[in-house]
Image (cartoon, rainbow, N blue to C red; front, side, top):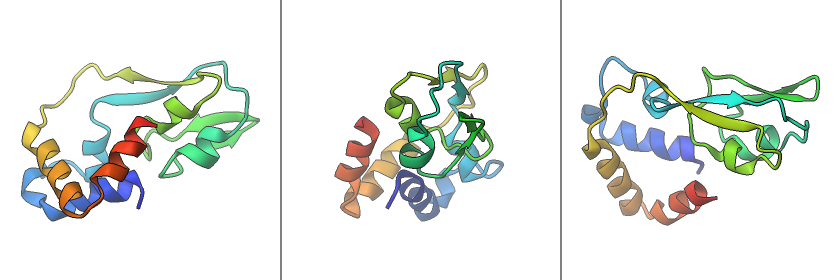
Length: 123
């Protein structure tokens, strides 16, 4: 199970904690917007190996990020050997109750998936 599926499972298990006006995709990418710097070497590691939702494609030997599909997990940032992908903080951040995060971690723990989720987030 990848990060996207884990987070979707959390939100589906506890729909009352999710703001009704936003989709899960919007909730997951609240804080940051992905950006691509000019240093892309065209290795395609971000597109082929790191992005769990395939939000990164390659055009003319350069990574192209589909921000509408991006879930903001940051795996592309940590996996880019050239340092060409980074996140910029959004100007306005909607408030998100801390209980949503706590509840999500509890669900992952109950399902025996917390450790694998933490390993993915640390890589």
